[in-house]
Length: 257
Image (cartoon, rainbow, N blue to C red; front, side, top):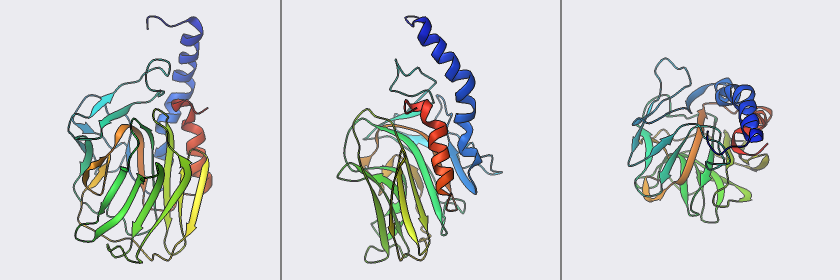
């Protein structure tokens, strides 16, 4: 690693040997895990590392550029693999299946680093056209992160969303998570900041749309522009303590420690 000082090399060795192995795999401890996408490197497939018998491997579309491990001083603040999406042609997806057609409580999240600010998707199984809304985690038009869910696929009163109070900035890594508890609450996290609202939504709509990372509402203009790493989804309401543990465990990988 040319050009690095002894202090940088020592710091990198500590992070690489003591922090990274456990932190990379931390989402595998989440309950009822339906997918975990972490260490995909230079192929057209983003491999599911949830250890499910039938993994939900995602197909990369466009010029998505999966990158190997980097050093925070040289790469965009991450000591973990991520995919770079251009906001125009790039996303990762898998066709509709039983695993990801979640109709119960749900929790999902990822580490993201926007390279542009706009309405754009992180995790999506949601299509307004034809009233096929189900669930999505995204950045809204105010550059805040939000989770939205729908019970019947329609808009009206069957859709609800919770918005964080944190406004994103270009080039910063954020831990983003969203949780839906049926008939109870919608909650979002950005790093260690939590926002929650009550909701009367009594379930999730089972649509026939693909599961997508890096796009919102199946709209090209709302594809993610930036980096996404460590994405995961669970068919349960993960406890607040466990979500906070996951953030704390992985924060050193993304310059948040």
